[in-house]
Length: 212
Image 1: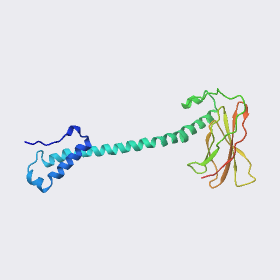
Image 2 (image 1 turned 60 degrees about the horizontal axis):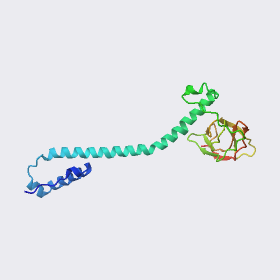
Image 3 (image 1 turned 60 degrees about the vertical axis):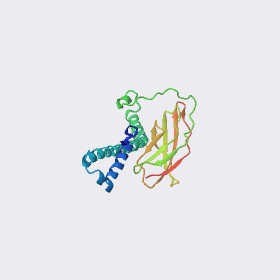
């Protein structure tokens, strides 16, 4: 007497489900209904088992998709927390404490080492850029970090008004800073300099951006 070939041990869950789907479709044909009149387990009992596995497979697919989306979103979330959260908070803490190394740890931040400062003058900041920030009247100004810098100085002027003069808008230990309080729709020019043990560096080239 011939036997049914299942080979279930070598099938993964999806293949088991596919084999079951093929079986259900065949049993529902006119020939299947005529020959297998009282299947065991019954149609209802079998469908409960079949549909349970289908639900499980769909859940796994859905969760894997959510996990992949979450993993893909992590780099952006980390970058946002670094740039728009931790770095801005660090600047706030430095300003609020006046750079007092005894008070900075109260914020949960460590105090940066002041060693390894160069003896000679610092070079001017390079790759100075200004871009619109997320909020109205705010422009983000950045430059390449310069080793040995104690403070970055940022100056600003109205770019489209020839009579405008440079004015200091920020002192920060960070090479990336948000400048707020600007007039939306106005073009602003920015320049940066670095201050170290030997004094202030030359000014950078200017960068221009419209305030959002």
